[in-house]
Image 1: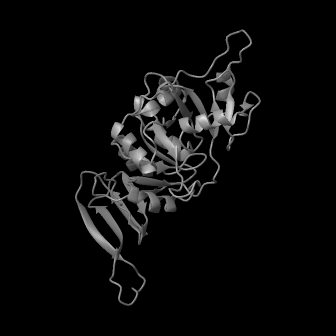
Image 2: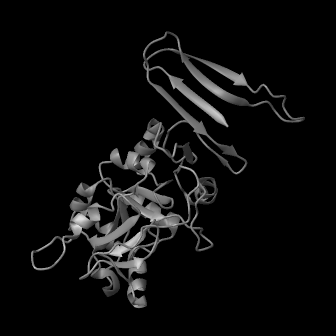
Length: 313
């Protein structure tokens, strides 16, 4: 484990190298285990620190740089949300067009900025998602949902329930709601790269507001929602819940960063289609069935939604 600590702003620094106190193995070269930058004069200064993992298969960089020459950035975050300043480099990378993995309240998700066309294309290549399939979005609040969708159905005084009030009781939470997209949502998210009849009429999008401190801390600092898709094994149809394994497998595919929030349980969100006459569960997941939801009984319709929302977390 290597540790880099930077103290001070606009001041002269001295650089010292501390070597391991343990004796090196026979034939092994000595290596630096800690790098510390210390300001020449004490002052109330900002501190930036980052823990970085190393393994024989990959090299993690402590500097929050985002260039083609850099390797995958690996950030260990407290699942409780403490020390969210560690997420600042990740937030900056997302704003610059990076694609990475973050935890949610269900499983891990591959994410990128909603307004970055190049990042969306990169995400599709990493996950091998067909260009014709729409994508889902992670939102910080209902304001984002109101901006990029037509919203939840409201009561009309003629016997139709006000579903918005019901939804507010379960969000943030482990649900994905399929809603009609608004014109503000980029076309790359709903029917990117195709005009075929199969997808041309599909203008729906899956939306999530995760109940996870790390995910919410990132979303709070973004100027738009994040495009998302769940993390599955490229060779097996299984959820990947260990961030270290995710980094090893997806770094060669071009992943830019991984936020380690600990191992998760392989339990994805419950997907509810809100575009029909009744809210219909098309995938039962972590979120329990609520009284105002109906279960999906038509397998054909379920396959339709699987085409629409690719591996939503």
